[in-house]
Length: 288
Length: 299
Image (cartoon, each protein chain N blue to C red):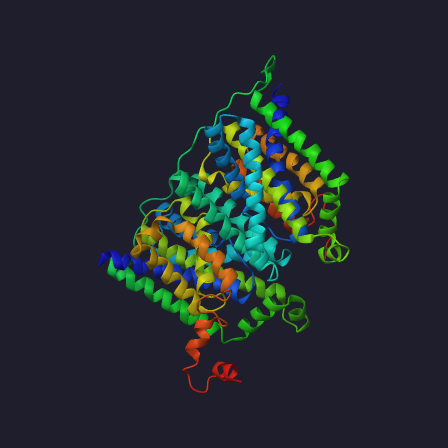
C-alpha cells in the first residue's frame, strides 16, 4: 500500500519538475543558454497568483493571468537582456542569468518581505480514498493540470506552424531565418511558453505546500537543470521522462531511509555523475 | 577602530578568495560558481582539527591548506570531461552537496556548526584583533605577490593557452589535463587559506556561511574588478566589502545590488573596472611614457 502511496507522490513531484524543466529545455534547445533566471519566473508566478487571487478571489483567473504576465516577462527578458550577450562566449549569458536570478529573488524579498504567505484554495474535487490509499484534491489538481498542459504542448509542438518554427530554430536558427521563419518572434514565443509553464508550476507548488516565499525558487532552479541534464539537453520528451525518474529516485530513496544525504543532494549527485559520464543524458542527441 | 579592523580582515580574506577564483576563472578559463565550497572546506577542516581533534593552530594551518588543495584537485577532475557552461552546473552542484555534507555530518557539528574555534596564539598569547588584522593583511600580501610571481612564469602562459583553445594548446604540447588540475589545486589552496583565516577569526562557523550565494559574491567581485587581473580582484573585493558598510541602503539590498552589478557589468563593461581592455585602465596607461598600450591608442 505504501508503494502505491509513494507512486502518487512521485507523479505529483514529477509533474512539477516536468513543468519547470520543459521551458528550460526548450530555451536551451534554441539559444544554448542555461536560463537559471527561470526559477525567478517560477517564484514570480506564485506571487502573482497569490496577489491576483486576493483581488479577484478566483483561483482559475489568477492561475491563467499570472501565467500570461510571467510569460510576457520571460519574453522581455530575452528581448532586453539575453539578446545583448548571445554573441559572447557561452559562459557570459550564464553568468548574466545568475545575476538576473539573484536580482529577482531579492526584489521579491524587498517587495513582499521574507515571510511565508499561506495560499489556500478550495476546489471542487472529491477526496479519493480506498483503505489506506488516498489522493488529496490538491494532488488531483496538479495531475490534471499537468496532464492538460502536456497534451496541449504536444499538439502545439507537433501539429502547428509554431511547433515547426520552434523545431526549425532549434536545428539551425540562421537556416530557419533564411527560409522565412521569424526567428525573433519564435524565440520570444519559446520564452513565453516556457515562462508561462514555470509560473503555473510555481502557483501549483505554492498551493500544494500552502506557502509562497521569496526563496522558494532557489533549490528548484538547479533541480530543473538536473532534470534537463538527465533527459538530454534540448530533448523535451527526455525532460518529461527524466522529471518523473528523478521524482521516483528521490521519493523512494527517502522512503527507503539509510541514504546519508538529504533529498535535494541526490539530484545534484546524479547530475554531476551524468555530466561526467553521460553528458548527452538519457535521450539527448549527440552534439558537437 | 576595532570595527575598521574587522572590515580590514574581511577585505583581506576576500582578496585572497577573489584572487584564488581569478587564477581558476581569469587565467585558466574554468568558470566556477562553487568556490564557496572550497572556502568552506578550508574553514571546516581547520575548525574540526583544532576543536574536535585538539590540534595546534600552526599545525592545522598547513594541514587545512593541504587538504583543501587535495580536494580541489579531486574537484578539478570533472573539468577534464565537462566544458564551459556545463562545468558551471557541476560546480554549483558541488557547492550544494558540500554544504549538505557539512549540515548532515555530526562530526562537523551539523546545522549548528562548530563553536569555540581558537584564535592563533603568538608567543603563548592568542592574537588580539589588531594582531590578527596584520596577520590577515600579511597573508593577503603574500597571495598577491605569489600570484604576481606566478603570472610571470610558464604556468600562466599554459593557463592562457588552455583558456583560449584547448585543442590548440594540446597541439603545442601543453598538457591540458595537467594544467587544469594545477589551476584547481592552486586555487583551492588559497581558498583553503582564506577559509582558515575566516574560521579562526569568527570563532564559529555554520554550513550557511558557505552557501551558493557566497560563491556568487566572490564571482561578483572579480566580474566587477575585471576578470583575469590581480588588481581587478583586489579592487572588487575591497569595494564590495567596504561599500555596503558605508552606504546603508546598499547593505539592505545586498543581493539585489550584486545581481545588478553582474548583469550590467557583463552587458556594458565586460572587462570590468580595471580589466586589461577596460576604458578606465587604458586611460590610466596614457600617462605612462613609452607604454605600449598608449602607443597603440595613438596609432
